[in-house]
Image 1 (cartoon, helix red, strand yellow):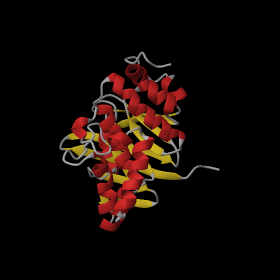
Image 2 (cartoon, rainbow, N blue to C red):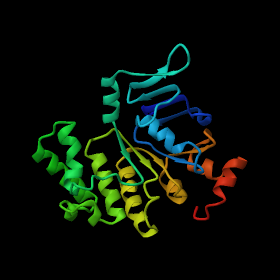
Image 3 (tube, helix red, strand yellow):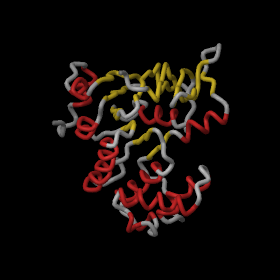
Length: 257
């Protein structure tokens, strides 16, 4: 039986002035699937994530998130967005982890994680804190609950950011270069957490330059270049591709198995 598709992207276009960043992007993600998006800087990977997470607006195309229409083309071929209530429901179904953590510096880690459940989901404070402590324990951070972000290493801050995203019980998680701001020795901490989430069948879309990690973890690899999808297939197919653009990109990485 075919897995349920919880993200469908069809014909998405986006330009910034004269610069065409996304050109007719179409892809889907099934429930429980891990999809890694790879490609050179400037290929449109992060812009695509930002559009799905409503941090940018598409010019054209259709996006369906967990059965809710984010946007679809109007009669003129321009992206028309759904009503505010639908957009809010879509936001609540997605968790986003940035490359630069984005923790509130004036809140301790426990407060960072409980803020949204209490304010947005109206979770009782005691339950929100209990849930947060369970997440922190799972991520090896329970001893840091009362610490402030500046007191944590980069790897610990990123794990706290993952806990904050998970606290909202999203149906899928998006990661935008989650290890690019970290020293190599801290990268492993974050990749371990993502690996454990994959083992639990969390649906994830990961923009990454960690090729060996993408090869090991992903159910599917999407290779983007110059605003289009060049490859969309299994890690075996993509990493052994005969496509010249794919080969040129991958030859810069010597850490593939």
